Image (cartoon, rainbow, N blue to C red):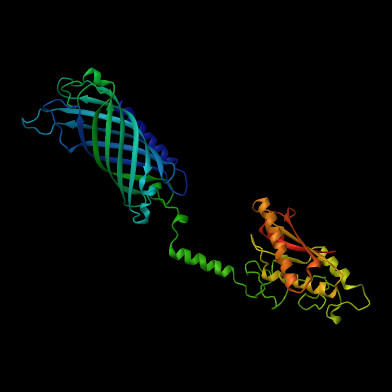
Length: 426
């Protein structure tokens, strides 16, 4: 029986070592330990075992599901002997073995020991299994007593390298249905046999050998995102600052700006590109009539005998070429687009007979009812800008239209276009 169990453990260890998978950390280990045992009860009167009897060894295969919890299968064996060879205590020798399946908790990772040490760790384990007690002397010599057992204990660890750790373990084992005393000189009363009626413990030193192609084992794995160093944080902040630089001062950060050197005062779109609203080839900041096409010889303005400006501007506005844009979850216009409100204000002053409706929109991120209110706040903020510019309130109306579902919500650039206030000339 013992040879079969030991062979199974060895085959399992070789199999898991051969099939250890790549991951953020290694999950398999082989644990080999040896040390002391101490049978507590039942013992016959006149028999005693030393507190530190050197006579125990165990071999285990362990698998960690993650850096905090795992399981192991282990085989332990040894012998109990009398405390002294003198006449003070009677002699005995009893061989034993046990096989246990146990759950393992990485207490060091659970309690964040890595905050003060990355070489010292603590595991807890608990499980159940079967075993056998075989006295070699006294009344029940060579009678094997099969038992079930429960085991619990703590394993202190010291990391020698990423492949090996030193272990110190203390475990308590409770046998059930044990009918023979540990010394083999007496038996357990019948009424006491059916429960968990025997107690012993082991104390061992040993090694854990970690298997797998990863750089570290789950016992020592620390998630990087959880403990960023000061240097890493400083680097990330520096990268963010670099991303937010706006070299040409057009309100669009360099990492989004497709024209990072537009002239001062140029009107740009959400990508930092110079706008030419009327399509006459003259950029808005150089065009004296930015919404009415005209030749360069007249600074972008049409001859006086052409169609009235109001028709061109109404078309540009109503076709969505003039918009005020906003940042995510904000009702404050972005700097590069606030000038659109000034163009509308100037147009209304030159054309006192027109009225304009302000239409607020939001992207599809967030609750629908919240976005409806946000779109109305955006429309109101542009309304306030036009009032402050001298436009009579009777010529203006504003309304929030909620989410703009016409754009691709998966695209951050498309969502930026949705966060706007548009104008409609009545």
